[in-house]
Image (tube, rainbow over all chains, first blue to last red; front, side, top):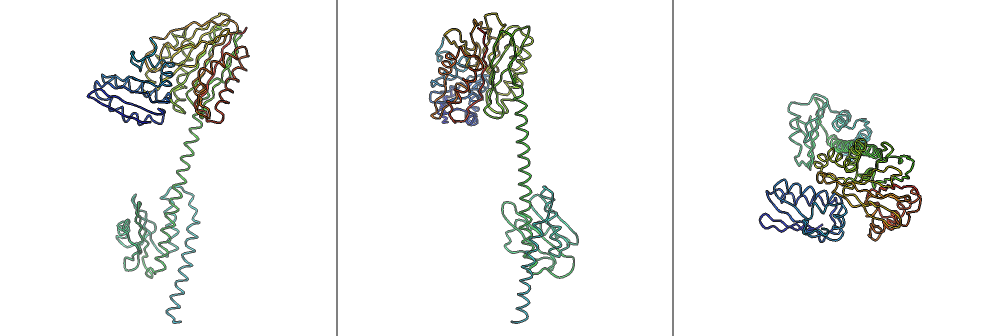
Length: 106
Length: 394
């Protein structure tokens, strides 16, 4: 999985591409933990090029979001590939991880 | 040939023979021990006789081992100092009554033998000591590898046993309750997994659940066993699926939050003959209601347990006319890839459920599992496969 970050002050964009599964958790943490640890940081995760995501990866996103919010910031998913959107909606995790403006359902 | 040459040749022959015999007897030292220090002690004790020595000292980064006595003062220190010296040749000490060989490298070691009296060590003796060092190191390494292997085998056995215990929480067969037909099967992808099914009957009403702990293998299975316990307790104390979901959340949330995992689950309460089944879904799929000629998904009212507090959980009343079926699967069915990478898919799963709606639940259940297996066509099972069918006879 490719991980790219783009930061401007407290706003961080993390772009992932490829398969996001249990094997990629370690790398995701190495990159994202320092970002969400910063007080008040806003982290946006772009999953437009993620072809597959499993429950371990979803649990990791939930965990990262909780860390961000505990530090006074937030983490949301902005763009999603179709398979990712389908899974987020089936699990109702879109109501938690995706900003309202980016969700497909009202 | 001069006497001196003959003597030298004879000495060389004898010392070569000696080395051979010494190596053989060393290799046959039956230590019966897997502790490297024990092995070395026994080898050195054997080597004392072979080299006509009174004392032996072995020095390594971990410390010093000494056997016998009669070594000159300071001999042990001399050997310790030699460890790590890149001495290409062994050296004699103490006026010929001691010999020290050393080996540099990642684990520098040195071996010394000493005689309290008698002749000085000969060239042959020195070569014997070199051979002893080589054999001793080899035997120690073998003992270490053997111990490592035993440790690994023990861990594997524990893992297997833990997996069996975790999976034992799943029902062997669904309950027999008049007025409802049931099918239940869960097939983990590995020895143990996070998928679960559970049933309870209370006051003539069937309570059922299926779900999936995030992650895989034994860690997911451990959380799964605790989850099943919480669900069963809720089934015994709650009168409504949403209330049961809130009780489960109350019991599990902190544990799941701390562990960084979540659990998708769908709960159902069905009183045979009522014509309706009450469901509560927390992030789980596929959950389908098949009535007449339609299959309708039952979406979650809340995300999986462990993500947020479950205050928003809602009970949904789904019609159960005669012949209707409620189907709870897990994503191990719909997301099983085939050889070309194509997933079995929710659409295909729904179509198969619909086309088999008139089949007895046992046959339909087996057929659905067989279709997923056939789709995999030799590709490894990607995730745990779970299927529960609840039918109102008709």
